[in-house]
Amino acid sequence: MRLIRVCPLVVLLLLLNSATAFAQSSAAQSFNRLKTLVGSWSGERSDGTPVQVSFRSTGAGSALVSELIAGHGNSEDMISVFHLDGEILLVTHYCTAGNQPRMKAAASPDGKIISFNFFDATNLASLNGGHMQSLVIALLDADHHSETWTFMDHGKMATEVLRLSRARIATPVKALARTERATQKI
Image (cartoon, rainbow, N blue to C red):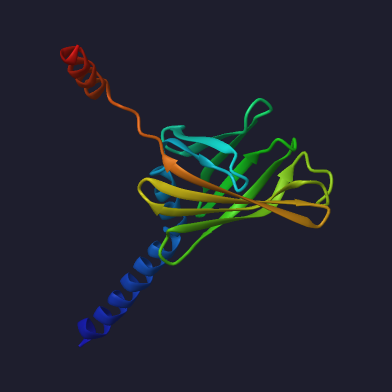
């Protein structure tokens, strides 16, 4: 009789523990989805300006670095670093505005959209100063994603959408095969 009373209690504890583990892993799941972006990306901004973005893993996989280069000549070069802080996914954006906003993530139920919202910054004297307020990354498929950046300055918001495709680089073997075929035609 005692065994019958203990079994439901054990089952209940196991279910609660697994539900907690699942809930705690949403930040890690989002971080792992972001890691699929490792590589080079090209596309354009909302105004048609070309943009290049690269993602690389660092710190034994504990951080993901994104470098964004936009425009010609007077190009913008910004770095963002994504990482987990316990059960929270964070990004620190090293902005051309000279400050470093930090944003916390929340994922959509299907995990394909990860939204980051401002919570603090370094080198930002006042919240009225220009800073990145949010970032939304939409993982469309393995070779396409978009980034929607929202900049806040004295209560006014400006939004920039980057539409990006994975850059395809020919492997040395494929490049060699093309060279050999071209040589044979001559």
